Amino acid sequence: MMLKKRTLRIGTYDTASYGWTLTGLKLSDPEQKTSYVERIGGDGSHDLSTAMTDGIPRYKVRTLTATLELSEGDRSDREAVLNHLVDTLDGFVWQIVLPDRPEHYLSGRVHIAVTQSSPAYAAVTVTAVCEPWFYAKREKVISVTPIVDTEQTVQIRNTGRLAVVPALVSTGAVTLTYNNVATEIGAGETVWPSLLLTPGVHTLTFIGEGVLTISFREGVLR
Image 1 (cartoon, one colour):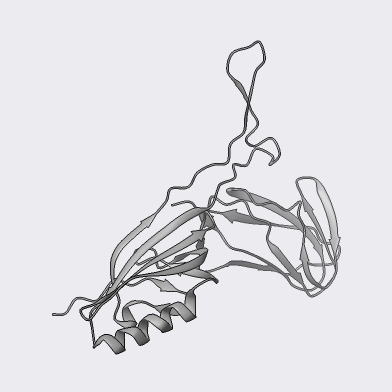
Image 2 (cartoon, one colour; image 1 turned 45 degrees about the vertical axis):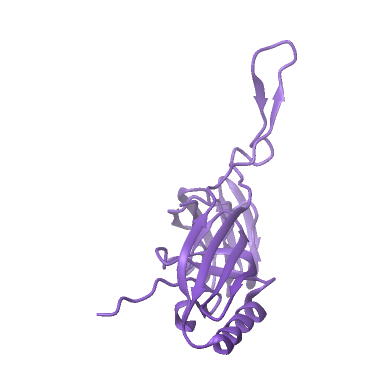
């Protein structure tokens, strides 16, 4: 029985479907952005790493490196596949799905380096400078129906690690209250920066009319 090749999906480009064999894959670990200021005349340092982010850690970009080899066909066939790979992917930001993480994707700018093109085989190194998060492929979507003169609540659970502000789409005028702060939104799409969903469960109170849809994408570091 022929084993199915492990594949790297970059945008809509599936490496296995073009005959590539994934021979190497490495993703650098997430690295927190830190800031320490020496205590003059005292021990240790002042940790200011999250002083400007309300205590939320922020992370640097991470690097994905993959190696691909191709031995199918003759040299001209492989050159055509190489040219298509470079022309299609190089230099752009893509969603990248790793072979063992089909429900998540990375987002990064891709570069393709051709390391071998001989009569025997072709090889490339794919590098991508990525955002630190694995994003869920499926958005989390919550829809509620506000009622005039009747205050209701909805609990929103962020099961990821990424703190995110959701998109709000309403078909009518709605008053929202979160953490004792209220705002009024009209029909259409709205982003309310105060509605920051850190990991965990959050309670949002609403009153008004129409249908309110709350959507966001969860993210994890591993």
